[in-house]
Amino acid sequence: MQPSQDGRKLHFLVTDPTRELCRVAMPVAAVENLESLFPDEDLREVKERGLDFTSIKQRARQSDYAPQTLIDERTDRRSYRIWIE
View 1 (tube, rainbow, N blue to C red):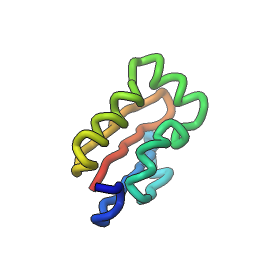
View 2: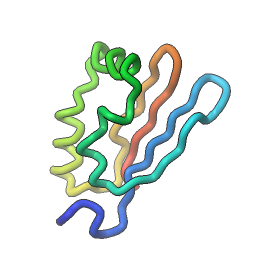
View 3: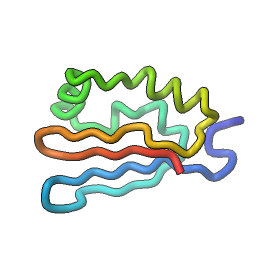
């Protein structure tokens, strides 16, 4: 199946301790660019903690982009939740 053929979306939510900063829905094909959704300093932090973007993308592909939570991570400044719905 081609990503986004069935209307599934990649959802991206960023919050800080007091408020929602960003909420976006995009085509599920954006899974291939997950790293670009993070600011550089937060990207470094989550990678240092062991977040493996390659395996996350592979899992999404292998599941045929089934609804699932891909990332639910916190940095010192923000929380990130990325999921397919």
